[in-house]
Image: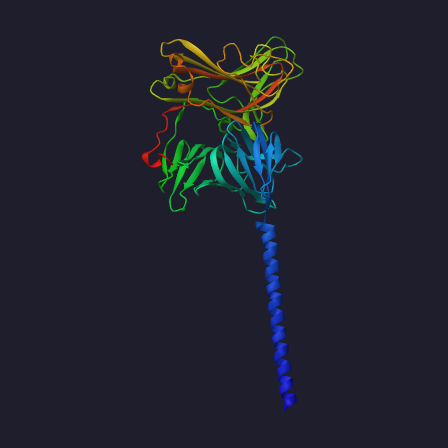
Length: 445
């Protein structure tokens, strides 16, 4: 009898072990299959991210709270970092895709951090393998301040950039375009020049789509975003990244005309080109040139857009990159900058006037060449080479003396000047409109 019981028990144990082994094998197979599928089809890896300082210093803070000042450039790939800009600094973060067929890395997105801006770069990932359908995902957190964003293209994949502000508002960008984001104590503001963005409230219960030519705003004391038309840009086809394909030799965008002036050969050149995949209008003079030359591009403002007397806001913006200049500063007379902006306008009395602003990268401390040209009203600005930089005048109605204020804008011009120069210009804009009024609910925030 006990032998029968013992045999029965052994049989039950054997079956239990067999069933458990089979279940374990099935589980291991499932886990292995899921793991292999996840690795092959859904796994990601970091995209290359380069921080480059256009002017001043960027403060970078790691996860261990170690701080360091960056004055030129730094690789921030694959690790969350916080970046802070002071009131005199500006930096650009480039998110890059790997090179193909031995070429250069390709720019997926350029994020320009303006002065007095703080943001945490949480991650930027791409699919590990090219055969998967997954897309690109960029995550920014704790944003406060102001930044410009350019997304150059999706390269056949979905794209998602998420920017969360300090107070929990969320902005999503889902494709190629040009955007400006602003987060202050009073509000979060998103301007879409090209593309489409979405603005969410802090509890995600309210959201608004912000299409091209509009801006979305959500105030601190309100939960629902609002969408309105943004300020008018009286420069036509000024976003060169979106007016033509980036191939070299594409004709100039409509309404623009360019020319070369030189004391001696060689001549300069102008053409649509790109810098790591970001389209721009490129002005170049090289071949060992040792005499004065200029490459100039201008646009006469359409007559129906010239009159700005009905507005109280006027701002000129430009985004550009100086790749090279051979002269120091802006030459012996302060007039040979590798990037110069010139606006021609009429004042209230019909007198034609000019406004200038110059930029340079190279400075020789042993020479004392003038910091501005004879016709300039402010000193030229020194920036770092090979870095995208965005210049904003601020409201020119507050900067130009009342007796000299613009009434009609006649033309806008940018040009490279000197001996040898290499300049990429991505955007030129003149915005007209009205000074923002802070709603009563946001006052004192």
